[in-house]
Length: 228
Image (tube, rainbow, N blue to C red):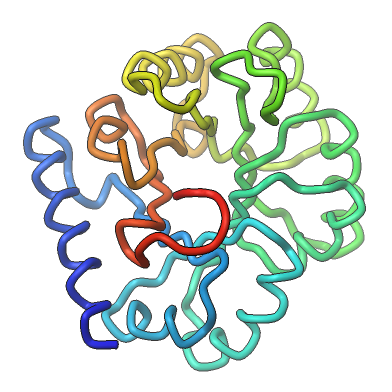
């Protein structure tokens, strides 16, 4: 268990180094520890070391793990970073503090309805299909301006843009493109977040303006499905 302390410190040092090169401040970067597929006992050591922002891919898995963990650490912030089905909108709004995968009109409608019902607003990143990949979620690039307008019209707070670049290709151009899309669409202030970068490329993402990095494997080791 104690060895879990070392990876978090290592990631923090790497973030500090990348920030120094990019002439950015550490507090501009939110480290999201991607705890998907990992049980509560693997998450606790990071909580004990002061990590407070975590990411989960699936609503059901988060419902099983986090209520108890949050009783012990009530200041924890929980981010939904995986694809969200419209029929899980109510559960997602109840459980998560930020949603990173708002990407289509049907989900927008479901989330707006869920937020209205719950009497709360959950900030959402709009996920962009940055590599124009058929198999990936994300709003098509050409539809982004209209979709952002639609999100604002439903009174959902925009946290910024999110992307997952194509695998096995240099990520930097895709990160730079997401940053450009944010600026081209007038996202600034509280809307100017950029959720991009995972274990293999978060340093690059920081250089390209990331505000939220989603790191799993570098903190927890390889396990379960997917990568972070």
